[in-house]
Each structure stands twice: as C-alpha cells, then as structure tokens.
Length: 378
Image 1 (tube, rainbow, N blue to C red):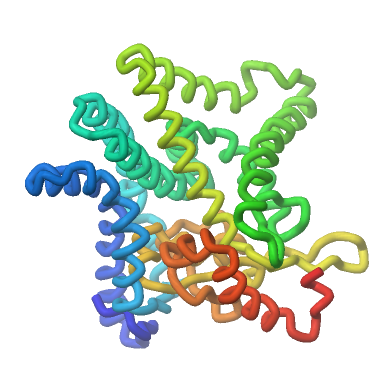
Image 2: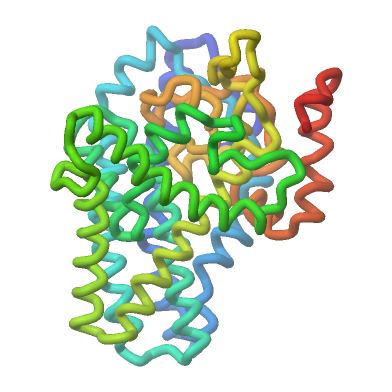
C-alpha cells in the first residue's frame, strides 16, 4: 500500500477499498510480539545470538524510520457518516488490541524462560531485556487505547497490561490528570519549550506516580473513604505488579527480578519519551477568567507517516485523540490545523535522546507556530 499523498477519494467504492486495505494494515502492529522470536531464530542460525538479542531496538529505531520515509504519509480520514459508525462496530479492531494483551503475557513469560536458559552472555542478556522492554513500551500504547474505552473488559485489560510493566498509576493519572491539564504547567507529561529530555524524565517519573495516588485519594475522599482502602484501584494494579515480580523471583531468583524490573523500566521510559515529544513547547492559552482554553488539535504534535501510524494504532494522530479522547484508534483523523512533526515517532524518539539536535529541529517549529505570540514561549 503506497501511502504517499493518500487522500479520501469521492468514489465510495474506492474509498471503502482503501479503508479495507488500511484495516488489515493494522496487523503490522502485531509484529513486535513476534519480533523477538524471529530475531532469536536468526541469531541461533548465524551463531550471533548475543548480537541479535539487541535486534528489537535496531528494527524499531533503525529500520522503521527508513521505511517510514519510503512509504510516506497518510491523510486518509474516514467519512463521519458513511464510514465511522460501521468501523466502530467492527470487532476486528477490538480483537487486535485485546489480542495484543494476551500476546504480551506469553512474550513476557517466554522471554524470561529464554533468558534463564543461559543462551546469552551478559551483554546479550541486557540486550534481550532491553528488547522485551521496548515491546512493553509499545504495549503501554495498546493499554492507552484500552483504558479510554467504556467497557470493563477493555479498561481492565488495559490496566492489567500496565501492571505488567509496573505502571498501573498511568490508568489514573493519564485519564484524570494528563487529559485535564495537558499543555499546561500543571501537567508533568507536557514538556516545556527548551526543556531537555533528561530534565523532563525524572520529573515525569516522580510527579506522575505521586499524582496518581493523589488523584485516587481525592476520589475516595469524596466518597467518604480513606486513601488506603480496598476500593483504591492503584492498590489492585500494583498488587498485580508485586505478584508478577514475586513469581519471577520464586521461579528464577535474582535473574527474574532483574528481568521484570528491567523491562518495566525500559517500557516506562519509552512511554515518557513519547509524552515528551507529543506536546513539546505547546501551550493552552490562559483566558481572561483565569482558566485555560479548551484542549484542541493545535495542542499536540501530529505525525502522519503511514507505517508508524499503523504500527502504533494511530497514536501519532494525537491531536484528534486529545480533542476527542473516546474515539477509537481506527477512526482518529488527521487535522491540518495541528502542528506536524517532521518524521514519525521512531525517528523523533531517537532525536529526543540528543537534546542539541532536538532543539535544532524542533525549536524553530515551535517558534514559527507562536509567531507574533512570542510571550507564549516564556
């Protein structure tokens, strides 16, 4: 499917065909679940298992950015009347995300068994844990899609997936914190203009964890309940994390501890790097009444590259997500009004790791966006 300059055709037959092609393109998002196994097989076949143990980050941050540029951008939006109701009712899209949760459980257990087999040297073992952690970070994106839904099955599946990377608090803080305060100084997940990634990350780790507990405590207080109550959902999510860690420890000892906590740290870090680039330098303006303006498409960076869009279940159409948080991933739209990243998320994550390069690329875009309103950059 060549996504270069793809636009919505007026011919309904052709439009439906393109939407069907894109529908099955989301199968690409399942690739990370198989990638570690494929790379392990290649490593065993070539006798380079320790090298191929690092293969997942090479594919995600090396090969995919190249393919992203080759395949180009995708501006295909479904028609609100003709397409969206039917697409929302199709079980295929829901099965994809719920199936991802089940697949990650299998991958997490199998990955630890492979590590415990002794097949890797120390550098290979670190690379293997790093690779599984990258997949876990992609899993947080799947969990993000699920926790925004109304049904208990999806929201609980999303929370369970977050618990497997020790970030159950995201389910509370993201919905009740980030979406309320996005692109304001009150949001730890919205990076400021000129703020380096390595200044942003430790603040995001700490503030998002603490704020999740604060938000849940306030919710329980309104119901007349103490913070440490069985109805505190954070206790349940972190209990699942603790049970998973205990099982890894009982069966595999310190190796299980290092693996479970290591992949969790990589997954959470990948999430926060994505948070860093999604709102960098963008602000909701303060109104005369002292409140911030309503969240709109212009308060998130978009990236419309086809491959990373389907690879990430349309996460890169982040502007539409923040403007309409309950829209399912398959019907998220591209908005021309939204500020556009110069590349897909895979490329931008690598760029963010090098603050001077990041500022060289992104600061002029932020400045151009606020031209005539330079005070917004303060």
